[in-house]
Length: 314
Image (cartoon, rainbow, N blue to C red; front, top):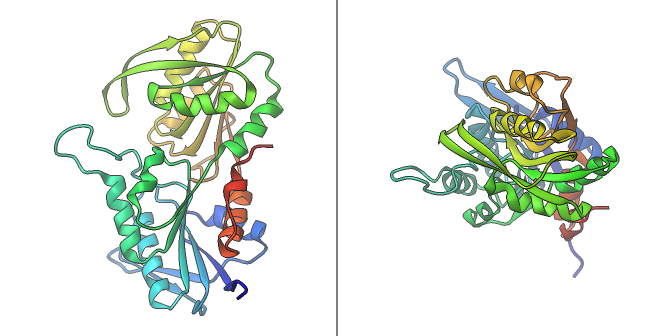
């Protein structure tokens, strides 16, 4: 019996409207009509302005702050389920709370697991995301997870820079595996910035493991939050004799004084994706789009195809 391809409908939450519109354009279909109402007390009520009965529904919403983004996504999933959608995929380009993936001290929550439970309980059949802070978060879900890799976007861009003495760097020990993965594409050396924290978002000390003298350094990370780590690492690298230093980060959280920190830093540029919309433009921040990658993944999911080909870097 031949495979049946259900009609596809793409919808966007209020936190990812620009990216969702780009994904829809790349996919070749207009975004579905969805109204998100807010009561005077702040309660959210999503409403589908069209029938989605029997459709494969893809709901695009990153779960960055404010927390309304997450709750809006949960309500969108529930509304789609009650409207008899055939298959519901939560497309979460940035999965918030991913840094709370373990108990690193007593009496704390494992936030990433709780969010996974909420998305599943709301009625999602599948989740599609990109560059989870810890890859093992996929195991927190009891539904299929399509974990897309932004390296297929970043590697060609880094190659286009044609840096003469390229060395890949990790801003901390935890990101060393990610840095080594990138380094393999360029046959480049890896250096690591070893940092010690006093508390969250506050660095006590940092040192470099490896030689950066006369090198063009590219720092690799998944999240740029306050930009404190990247700024400190960039300055330390330049003080150690590097020719230049850039940073590549998938998710531009950019909270607090992050924009000012980046613009005053030794970074030549910060290269990010559009999984989270920027609050403002910056001369040091370059944005690469993930829309084509998500559109191809949506096509493959709907047509029951493999997504493994999307991990291949040209």
